[in-house]
Length: 73
Image (tube, rainbow, N blue to C red; front, side, top):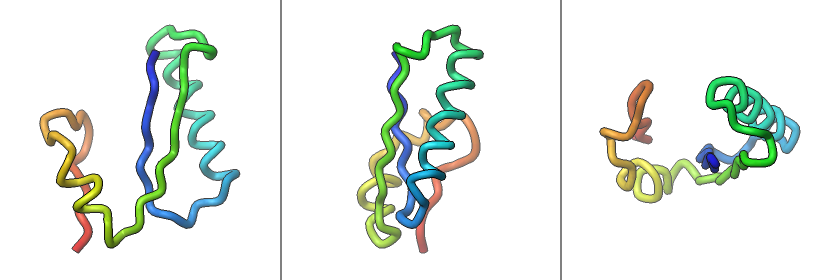
């Protein structure tokens, strides 16, 4: 606890995704007091043309705690 899902466009390197996951875990450990073994991060690549239907339309906007849901044009 917790498990964190990250949805992003394709094109990031495995190194970039790993660095992001590591930073998320470090921050969650510090802020939530959760041990490393209790944290997991998943990366889901979503093509820009599928973003709205697969991600943006399914997210409850009230659950977003910072910024706003990005939508492709």
